[in-house]
Length: 129
Image (cartoon, rainbow, N blue to C red; front, side, top):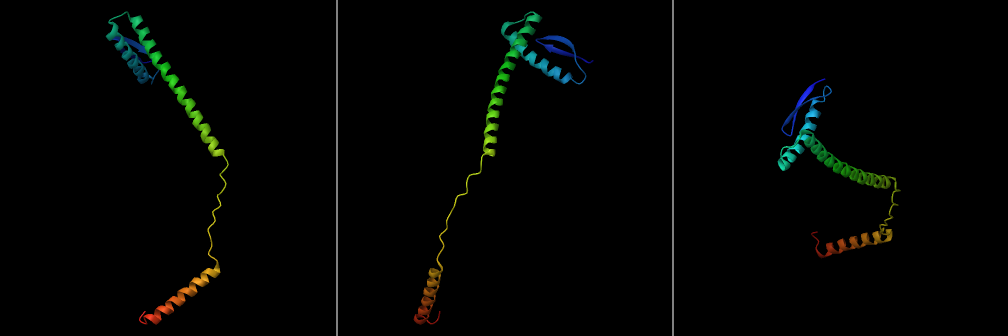
């Protein structure tokens, strides 16, 4: 079982941990040391057990706040997932009927006749066309 030397609040501690967990121990010790540094800068030197207790309580307070935020975000995410599921399961909206007016065949024939007469008339006025 490896032993890791950690510094917390200007004091050194040898702590044993499981193989491969040294990084996690050092990370946790760094967070605890950060809180201990805040305490020592505000209060000054204090007994080891009191410093560790207060630093631990400060970390616990931060952790509790983060847990509350995580719960809030999980609740919001659950609401959004429920809304998404509702939208996915909702029936498709009915297709909208769009009517496009169709030009009656008689009008098309009449327009073609008018075009032919106009071209014939244009030929009589200007035979070069």
